[in-house]
Length: 117
Image (cartoon, rainbow, N blue to C red; front, side, top):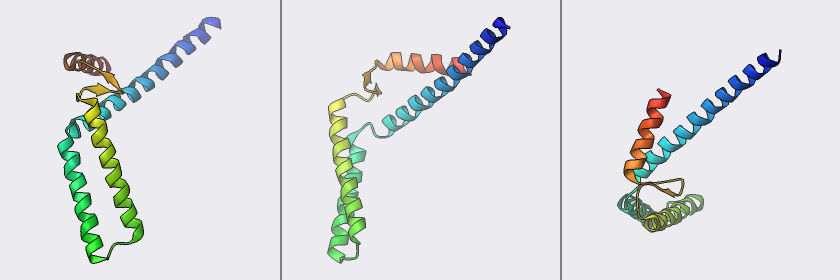
């Protein structure tokens, strides 16, 4: 009876560990995709220019609602902040605020993917 409970506890720990590992792997993959897409400030600056052009175009026509104008101004502020943050980070290989060597990052990724496959 006691060994059955212990065995059940071990299986429960294994299942929870698998779920947490999958969540963390998904988090890391999502973070690396976002990091790869927006690692340069040029993309963010282009988006910021597009937002500015929309704001200028709509204020000239007077066709934009006040709510839409506020949304564009908020998105413009978010783009400014994200550009500043990317300049502060400096390197594109940061995961959850931790500085990683690109070679170490690739090694960890390969080990995790091979372990879960």
